[in-house]
Amino acid sequence: MPRLVDQGVTRLTWVPGVDGIADITAPTLAELAAGRDLTCIMVSTYKAQFDGSDTTSERAVCETANVDAPTMENYSGTFELFRQWDDVTEAWETADLLQWLDYKDVGYLVRRTGFAKDVAYAAGQQVEVFKFMADRPQMPAGTGSGYLKATVPMLKQGSATPNAVLAA
Image (cartoon, rainbow, N blue to C red; front, side, top):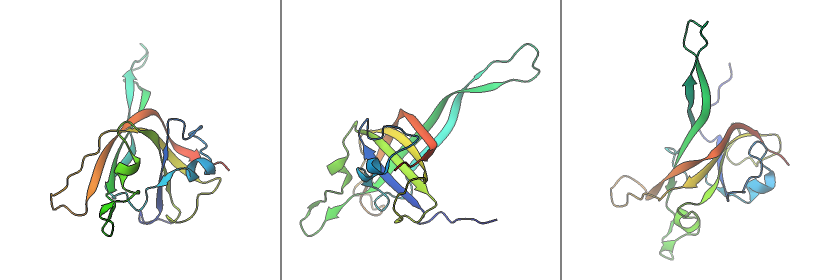
């Protein structure tokens, strides 16, 4: 059985805006081109995942076992991003998250898995899409825990799919 090691085969793109992606089941290449590539600034401890659905338990009189029916899907996310400091100009770079991501910004995280990270997006590729709103960044500076980074809790905004197909 062929297997794929989970290193260097993920691409992450943030597409800003409430309407940054018109149809989450078929994001277009133009919509992704308008986004920001997060692949090399995202720390590997980030999270974007589907969680267990909310359920209701109702069974018919004739059933002899409980029945759980899914009602609402759940997903969650947390961005862990390296901070981007320019030691020549001694200023934060435009790629630094505080330069492009504000509190309450809404957008879409698009994750493609399987192709090498530097392979261009192409129509027909399968991706996951999560609609999020950014909470306040949390920056643990001065803790001696590695590179400067920030954690951004991402608040779900009601739209996500694990199997979108990229459109031209």
